[in-house]
Length: 226
Image (cartoon, rainbow, N blue to C red; front, side):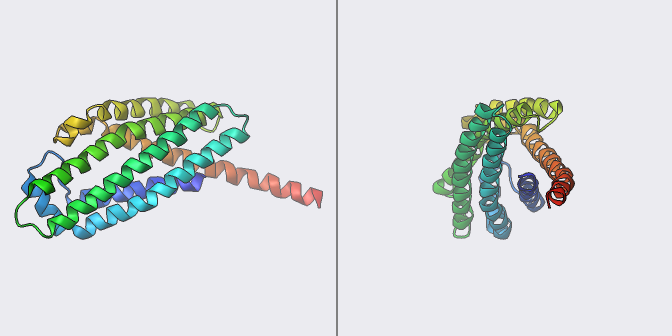
């Protein structure tokens, strides 16, 4: 489960690095710039969307693994872990819609000399899907962090990080209509998005270390029984 968390954090970080490196437009940029970018950077979008297909099973695998671990450790935080699984399933569905709409944007960009109303609508729907994903991510983040903390899997600072970061994601998601119209309120949630990656990486490393530390004891016990 720790390795899954690290892989998810790495995949999302790479995905965002590709988008930033390519110079992707903001949702508030002129629609002509949006069209020009997608006409010229089809490969970058293909990589980002392809990584989304990897992120979804990694996310669901991590959350279900966390729920199972919480159940085995005495069920402390089980309600929070169930909330995280439900929110994570919703997040996966919204991100799938986000990726599909992005495919539609980049495919239509190759056939247009000037932005059409349909192209602009697809871009706005893509923005709206990302905005709606923010509260789902915030709920997933808070639920997973509180479940892990209740089961003594993570230190207190990670719980505080999740509450603060998840709260920013929830606040930004409440402005999803404005974000779809190009509002800069999207950036309210970006520190929370970064906090999610930090939490995933820290949790993954902690779980991997705990697993590694347990192995010598397991091996010694096996030798004694033999």
